Image (cartoon, rainbow, N blue to C red; front, top):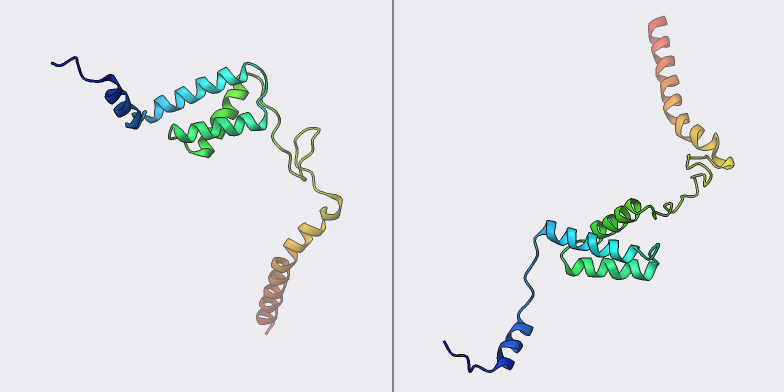
Length: 131
């Protein structure tokens, strides 16, 4: 075996070689631990969360799964901020609340066509049975 091979050639070859792919479970575990280390300082700002998700993609984790892992780690650490509330969701207790302008209007608009069809069918049936 020759030990006189130049080191720079081996180092250049190693630099050109793509890193080995981690299996799915190992990448998730690594990303989870990395996220925990980032969260130790407190809640993640948006820019740091974005950088974590980008790094997860390099590990072979898709964006949606990476965001779920970050959210799960925040939840485990007790730092999960409330999810963005929809306009129809009450910030006080998280229950769905109907806005005043849709209280009965939306329900009535949804029920009028089926009820009208049912009434027409019942009238037709009554007219046929009376003959």
